[in-house]
Amino acid sequence: MEVEQGTLIDVLNENGYYEIESFEKNKIEGIIEQIKGIINFWKNNSILLIGGSYLFEGYSQKSDIDCVILIPYNPKIINWETIIFQEFFGQSECNMETRKCEGWSLYCIFCWDSSTESLLKIKSNVFLIKLFFSGLEFDLNIVTLPWNEEINNLMPKYGHLNINIIDNIIERFLKEIGVDSLMANKWADRRKGMLLVLSGYRANVQVINLLGHSTTIFRLVLMTMKFWFQNHSIYGGKFGFINGTTLAILICNIILKNPHNNSIIKIFKEFMEIYSQINFPQINLNKTIIKQKWITEFDEKIIWNSEKEISDRKEHFKLNLNPEMEKHTKIIWAVITPSFPEQNAAFNINQSTATIIRHELIEGI
Image (cartoon, rainbow, N blue to C red; front, side, top):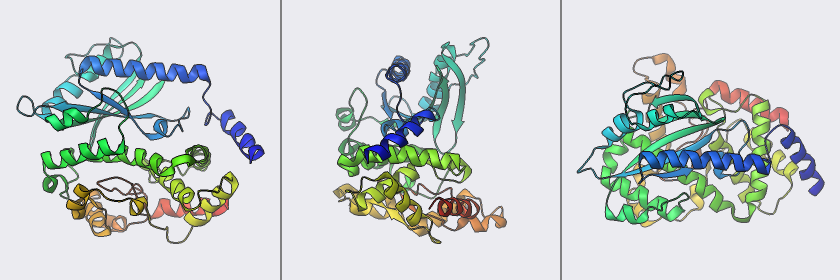
């Protein structure tokens, strides 16, 4: 096993996928501290959470850094729209040559900083700023939390939230905003987008919790599979292929089934054999998790099911405007996040990309 891992790590290192040199790691951590400092200057009650590959310790030179900015606010004093459109995005566009940007939005504050190389506002079902800063790419998602004493007591000043704290925040978010309006079939509902950002971060933390002592082997397999998928051009959720969350869940599922299997080759082979089937197997890690009482109360509204997804897909692809998109309402692969509300991490995979993925996996056996 040591020879197997040693050779593999050498290959990954040569391609920038595994070990980050200590000086480089210190540099990255220093840049993240700069980002935290700028965000705290903008809002001193903000909390910056870092998820994705960085949380999994699977960060590579080709990765971006997924961030969630939590902003508690008092709805009696200010509304969430003001925070998003005026204080987060602002009304001005950044001129990178002159560093000119009018206002004191977070967007403008980053524009003024000489370490910022590019900035982009994204306003879809989530609100985020794509930031290229000191050579690193950040996705800064914002979540505004209606303030009350309970939420205030839950919020640590820095960094990492455990599952219980995240679940308490999600519970209070649902109750404050109203679960019926949030979980309605409206992709344009921006508050639902914020809830799903929290849910996505929760899924990352839960994967780590489920793995327990198997996190080291998970990390090595994750980096290996990411390297393999990218080399075979089947990685990237926005293109309809496998995204990072889906890949992490698929690997976690295999490791949990046989936690004593420490052979990278065997795990790799099992991955290819299981996930190259004609019908992709449904994966739902939540089936092994005991639900808290509040989750049971909201059960039907926040638990994934095929009927809800088909309805979402019809809305997403605007079926009423383009009947030719009917084929995309079919669920190709259900890879359910260990979070609440549950999400299908493989939502963007379609019939065409599924055929390509399956072909590459069969070739890899």
